Image 1 (tube, helix red, strand yellow):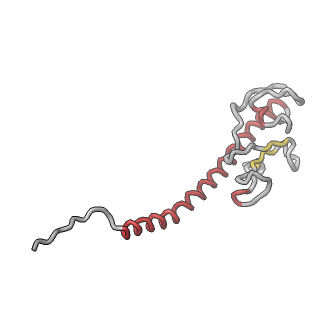
Image 2 (cartoon, rainbow, N blue to C red):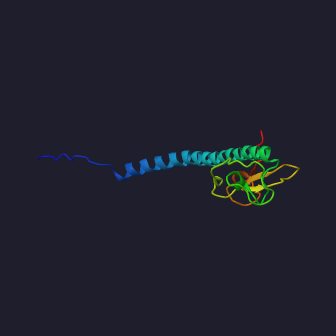
Length: 145
């Protein structure tokens, strides 16, 4: 009697399930760390953009005696304002006004609170005033150096 030798090709269902469980465990450990880093990066990007706005607004104020009004907004850094107070020595300081890392517009107010010349605010991840953690607001008073 001859015995057939069966060639083994492929993986068994058990082997595939074990590999899938291992991959799921690794993903469960690694993915949360990457996702939290992504939010940290967005907060840092918002702080950097606000710091850049602050520098441009300070240059605007030096050239024109005061920062743009709330109504003129950040757009006064890229388009000469036609409303009062008209700048006495306007220069284009920015090519574009980016949205915050969550896709929302920055809020600009002049004068700002506590006798500040201005304040720039990102409403954070939730896009609403207030909040804590990832949803916390980020403003130019927090980013001053």
